[in-house]
Image (cartoon, rainbow, N blue to C red):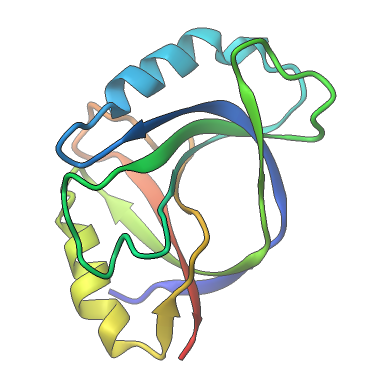
Length: 156
């Protein structure tokens, strides 16, 4: 497990968000409602989708699967001039990320990232949004699906 380290430049996103927890997972509901209206977003910068999570600063200190966080389904846009009704704008600030290439549907990669790679790296988790970048090789129902997992980091 060798991620590439990237400095992300600021990105403008438009999408939908929902509060959820691991136990009360509403990912399907969120993405279903977003994808039904995705074409209403007129100023797309690309076709890649962002599955983004925003955690409170203490979320990972005492992990609790019932703790809530904010999850977004979004797409990058050129500007915030035309935000469809019942959608929101979000500015993803610049910063360093560890980027993991992931193939398949096994979620055990997150355990490996947080419990093996991160503690043994020269980095700490930074308090910025985490996200998965879902490109042309992503298909949630395909065992060969590919995505990138972006974990915010800072130097120890």
